[in-house]
Length: 249
Length: 84
Image 1 (cartoon, rainbow over the protein chains, first blue to last red):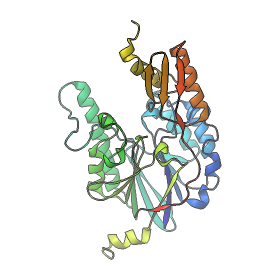
Image 2: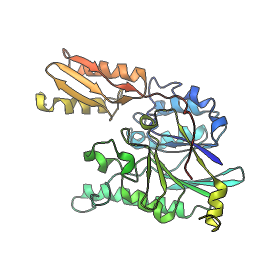
Image 3: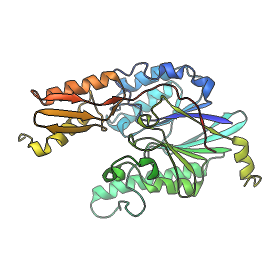
Image 4: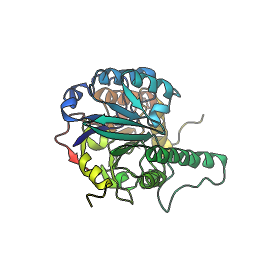
């Protein structure tokens, strides 16, 4: 059994010192892996991410993250990434990483993702350059996610996002802002490539649980949704390996 | 810039709070009635909650600020969920 701790939307900034530290002390006893689903800082400031890095420093389990829209605000996303990597966090954007846990290979493909909306009401890359750029960005990131997931050679595959791939985990948010909270293109990418779990954040008023049209479990781990320092999800790696080999239906 | 009309005031306050680096919170609900500003939503820390009140006071001197935002708990979860 692989135990995955996940949280997003921590929005670290001034005053966040030790926000997570007390809860993280027992994390190595409770989880094998920590996944961070973006919006780790308030404005994407280097000094903000350093506060989070101090809380994560020395954690003896693998840590993997994607960035969120807030982490891009100061146009210093490369610096945010570098500070996280300095304390051992692997930061993904259209990339994947494989972690060996208990003899199983856990593959994580990650992207921030972007908006556009959902089936029947998705924005089109049609008309003004600004619309083409908006939807084009989502398409590009979704394509990269699908490629990264497809290329993963792993026993379990997890898609780590900031924006939501489905509407269900947005329930509670105002309908008017759905197009800015996610895109079905992200779900389609994961359904095409296959995965065992999708994690995302961004929708603070959303709902924790949902599934893609192909049935892949989706969890919105935005901290205001889970209302804990993190949540822990378990995946039965042996069952998944057997299923892949046709041994479990 | 012209003064904000009352009809649009809550939206301008919301935008100002988003763009103030001390706050940078997109999750706030702002309502203005007479000379009273009601603020709602989730915030990460008690300090941020106080800062939001201070910034709102700077934006609308003379208004009563009613900060009903909630600090999101960051405690350990009770259990775990099998998902696959």
